[in-house]
Length: 310
Image (cartoon, rainbow, N blue to C red; front, side, top):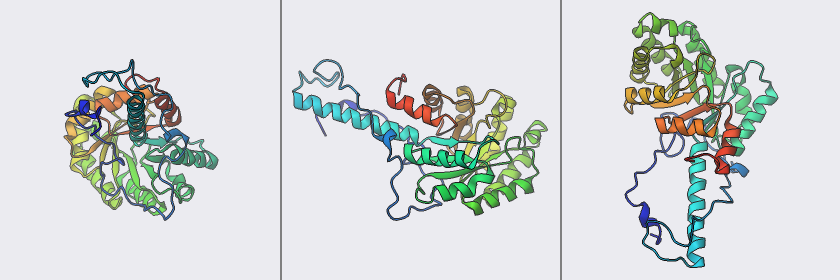
């Protein structure tokens, strides 16, 4: 152990998001090809160049006196490495998302290139673009492909959602983001909600299924009951929102979902997450994954050291 590291002894380890030390069933659906570059090999993951070594010539809390130039340089490098690790960890929380119906094939190509260059966990797209993503990312299988199902309203009948899931898997999807039947929740028919999720989970053939609850449309009790259905039906995640209705993700909803699933599955926050501070707020509330179309701007902000708590 280096002279300055003992000050961090006893600090609780920070939980890693999915894809960064935390396993999600089925998440390794696509295997890396020989020679494939590691995730995040571009400029965004190079670390921060201007991270100061601290104030003064001593390290607070170590009981160490004035530092030699060599010690100052060693400590500065230690902090740069830690900062770069935190940056990579947070980038790996992000599902880089483009779900607009006006998105073109070139837009999707750019989305995939950004995910590969910056180091996002996945791209999240409409079913029509899953096969294209599989082509664009053929040399970067570390970037997962997520496909939405029953999107955005969730009111498709179950066989349609099952077919969408099977087709997405056939086209190369690694994960499924399905919308629950909101009307079934409003009718109190939780048996239907749970049964439908189970069928989609089965159709996903072991790939992680994220269940979108559309929390802004639900009461607190409905949110809890729907999350319990997802948890008990074998979902890998409960997810807050599509981003198409209501206010999107809220920290209090993320906390409630985290408490409800009790570690049996993970929590994805999505909808209205536009800034690095939004990401940090959701992470602190308990989110394991973040869905956002503003990933590039968030990455730039996290890397700039301008975000409090980053």
